Length: 289
Image (tube, rainbow, N blue to C red):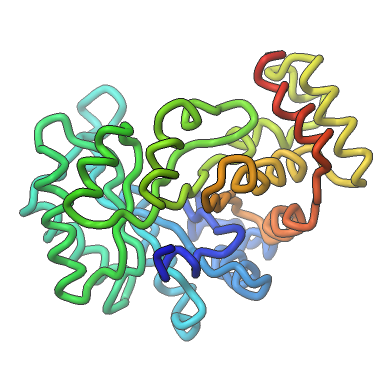
């Protein structure tokens, strides 16, 4: 296993929604949220240039850099004039420009895990990863990651330079990663970083508020949560953490939050130990949707 992957921990912290504007609410102070994650033993802090908060993240980890496995991404360029709001750039020149800009905004000399945020339909992934590999050779990046790619992309990229982590959405309500990407990652020894492990917060909602999830599967989740004296979202997060045993590869859930209280709840989900029977019930969750 890649030494960098071993430092990712059992759970990461996704900083996507962190902003400075908190209205004076101490529970939502972004620096306090990141410090609470580090205090709880979380090592990976994940951001991206597209999140427009790298300066904030850099400020939050200042003085604690040696505690952090810092991850960032490049490739999405905001464009308010196009549908979806962004273009994709992954050419070698842009790889170098984007990495230098992220290093500057983060206030660090090296990014531990640097992802291509989205594959480009115009640039062969070999060219992009080749330019990213040069950053490793220069000591500006320690490891490479991919996000929003296909299994074929992963294999082609890995042939150019070892890919440490693949960041894709994975939850009880979104399991597309299991079809082709998971077998490819397992074959190559690539860690899965599972973003949105509670279905973009959907599985944190109460039964009454969560009608987007059918009553049958919701009842399964709520029953198991009651048995563990936990919340539904914690059980959903624990299910993702148990995936590494089911699929024989390292899986690191990456929940994100803007509150210290929610951060602590997410960390506590690491202590929810699901039985084989409960895992079988949750595995049937998708079929019942």
